[in-house]
Length: 427
Image (tube, rainbow, N blue to C red; front, side, top):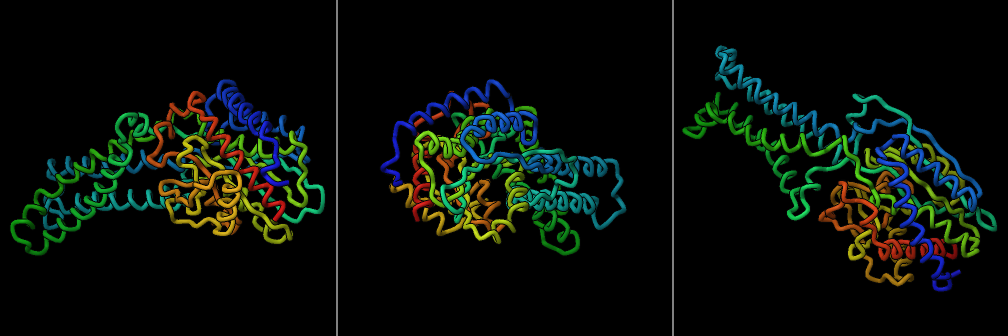
């Protein structure tokens, strides 16, 4: 079947169903911190629904530490603040009078090292999504849910539609950015401050051993006080994430969750049987904790997908809200990871077939989608999303509730997903 032949009433009904279900999930199950019981409860709720039109459903358990991904923001900020304030107190107590060329020799080393450590951890955790901090946190069980619908004939291809069920800890920078965007200025201040502290420490230490004129004397004797510029920035970093408040996650990413559910539901309602494509809906947990669920799934199934002779592709769906930013994300994870070029082009073409010729290739330049974890594992993947990259005012805060759902954007996503499925099966 071609997308143009698919009954539009089925799509409209599923959009309405999605809005009602997201509202119900938020009211009924409460906050969905990565790896908590509420996420699992929602997945089991979805299983009951999908058992009626899928050939197989199930769960895969893995271990994760929910706070390990972002909790470094508190530890490194406290580390740096302590590395400046405590040595300065010791200077006033004459502890360093006989150590080094200057009383600030040891304090400058401490402050510079603390700033360097903060930057390295931030780059590993947020830049490359490497689980550097996980070893310091206790892990607990989490689950990925999957539902499979078999084709009429032999399984020759596999298409996975993926969305994550967990929601983010609230980001205070964005909560208070409703009228003025505070996110980037405050983060830029923190990054610049850390770099500045490293530079100040190096220059001040060099000035203690080598004549640099008046500037060198100033840096050797008073440069340490410049670190307080960074201390103020680190205070804002400490309050960046509110671990006691979870975003409702209506758009990010219950829209993606129900996109995966309705991908199969719509085919069932329309009585459409795929020819040779096994269609899988995958609802992951742990995306907001550093793509943990997807990484666990990719690790468990990489060899299977590579060796079972079935061509496999993954379409990740993350936030269907801002239609003017509805694009295919061919680059991911802070633009450092390339999603599959051919499959990205394929989805873009399918979008054009569905009437969305304006879809462009875009990049997740801040953060990441689950598609990046698949791509890093060598599994063909790409992502679609419709979210203001500014970022949107509802992103990762309490405003991401069911009253912010946009049915027209959900409908656009469902049409492109359906078009991709039908085109993938035909081609």
